[in-house]
Length: 593
Image (cartoon, rainbow, N blue to C red; front, side, top):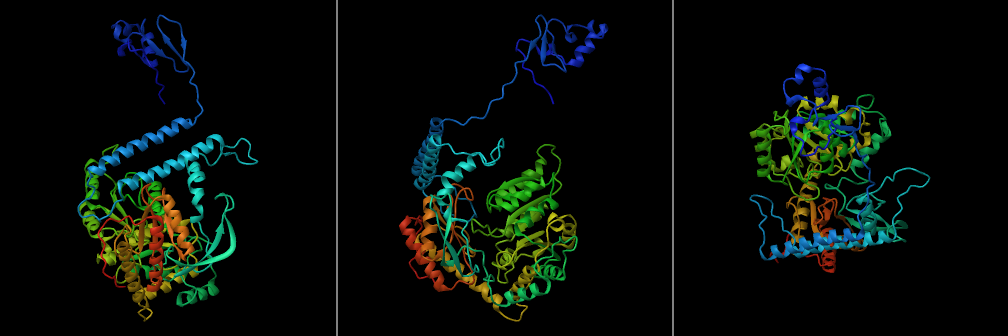
């Protein structure tokens, strides 16, 4: 480490010498005779190695003033208020200006997204500002205690803005999340009724249940059921080999059913080999570090899932984020990164990988796979596609985004997906070339350390995948895929016809409906629950602060009558909350299912 000493500007740089230079000067008369440039004379400054003093010729030794350590102090309530007020004024002026002189934000060849009005944006920031202001005022007079009981001297675990946000924003509406169920998450679901006696500090159950139509679970093809061939096959396997291997795959955790599953997944995807894991989230988090490392370049979509972001952070690779679903921005950033090389060394990258999702779980958009393949072939980059929400739910054969666009599966270098959505099970997979899978069998932390997939879960996946592929001799799989497609198109078109802003592609089973304001999100969730519809509200920080929404996940198990019931209740609650934000012209023609 280098200790930096501030020197008066009157002292010329030539007169400043290091300890070694000064000692050399003193020990050599021949050097001192060469001139004043190397002398430690009257104006010399000597930094003593093992001393906290600076010797200045012509003066006595002056000790350094000791650095004071200041305890971090929160700003006053007055300062905090004017901080939010200043931002509010700037935003208000900006919105007024752009109201009269609108700014064009549309880009070529990108999915058309209807934006909310400037006034709505202003009310969003105002609502958060009011909540924060009330919270700061309350905690100024009644400071919260963060001390832990029976732990004298311990630093509080939960401090900072996150805990403030939890106490003053999330607490008020936490009954809209973390809701317990007591039934199969099929087309209908039983919610456990709850209430709070102390304004959200605690939640208690009443002992009653609420029967609702389920549009919150990822049961895209309706295989989450407690009867039928999947249930029967899983029950039989449970009786034969139990529910766990109690060991990772590398030790005593590999069973014949795991090999059978991996072979079937590879056949379903049209690739050479596949490897499976017991947890979908961990499939990304624990395998990306096995494929990437320092010196590697990653181009990541700005709306990629948290599991991808965490896995990339753990890998140590350099990550450059491109605009959501924008091939032009991706190509520009990839080209620049290749031209300039590593930001520090300017050396070439070891490898470049493009990381995207098939369907984005918060946006409902489908990745532009043909353009991604074109770019990756042009620049010799690898392509990693997370098909957690698209596998089974997209394509005429349920093969995901690859099947949807008719792209050769070999054009995608690394296929990733989960079994928690369309297959009604748990776990995830990575598929691709045999060399890739052999590498992961040796290096993946999920393969070496985590317990292998539960046998009945593996059987659930096998049975549902056999049905989807039609290998059971029936057309049930094809019927479910077509039913889901019809449900999605009908539901999306009806929502738009009603006047709601809906994000995503018309074929995506993830349907985000924009509400923007936190009070509207909470009221929507509560009112729909009372009316027998179980949906999911999403707000900041899961989305950007102006992106609060309801997210509906449709299923092949939903009937037209169920969809009409949901749409009727959503429309009524929409009028209660004034949430029909769309200003697009609406067709009055009846929409066919």
